[in-house]
Image 1 (cartoon, rainbow, N blue to C red):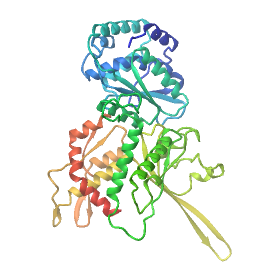
Image 2: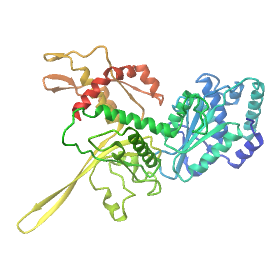
Image 3: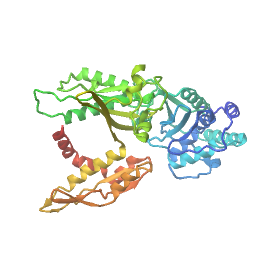
Image 4: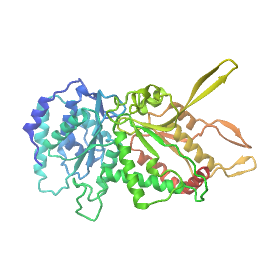
Length: 484
């Protein structure tokens, strides 16, 4: 597709830079929405250069004025997500997903930062002319068309910003597939699957040109998640039946008045369809009835007094904006035994519960009552520490008398990022001793811990955690079954 220089230069003049400098970090470009329009335009224009840097990896010249010297032969699809995650409605942002579904590689970040902050129109024009010349020289080479997958959250300005990115990318001759409102995890999975499936780039999800099913869709993402959950549920369900059934609390999911609510609703619909197909008998609540989505978009302000950031930082339950007006004042103090909260783009989750106990004191002349609340929060750092401790105790179960002989052929690793809670890091690293029964075991885990970038899957393979999980999988499930 032809690069339309005149329209591109006009777009750059129409949307000049509004800040002295824009920086790209883990959250991508994220600022007040009032200054984000020129960023959306420039990321769209750089989309073609990012495909080139993705195909060449982390090597090569980092000088953005020489970026066009390599021909663009990449067939790798990439993606962008327009969101400001846990920030309030006034913010917005854009972040890029590499072909493997991970965050943008360092060379790509440098290209983004340099060109987004380029204010000289003549420099842009020179780059575009060189790019056209390079493409003309490679016109005889057969290439596979790469696609940019685009997703956005529910913010009022996200659709307009998405359209700006798409317009700029089309002027650059880039092919776009707009997925509309989706969660950030969906976008990353879609990008990954689009590069793994021969037929994944069909814009019409119902079109089939090969025998391979298109897996790069939101629907397939939901189906994979639902099937995995139902399979795990089957494995954890006791094989023996009893006359009495164990009651199960409904998981109330705080959608932060964002896209998480819609995603849960769609997931429940997939559960219902799969249940109808399998007609599975169960002694407890069927899977589709175990979840209740709360705080839909429009019921309240995005991420305000709700969502994972609010719950984790303030240690408070969210306001349930979808409650009746007379119930909202008391909604944060009621008992909720099983709940979780996600953020605005549903890529962070924390589980929590709160219980309110009322005590009545009666005397001969009068009676009075008082209430007290208990709060329990489980975040990712705590869950990781608990799981690591569970596995470590399994590895330490070989013992003779008062001594413990650990398994020598297995090891445990924990992946944390720079965002991890400092106390959890210390717990995982520092060895102390305490007595438990007759055996001495670590009070802290003394594990080898490494900080990692967002390419966690490569780090897991490096540590050998994937083989480890397979080796202890059956033992872990057996232990869980005994606790059900």
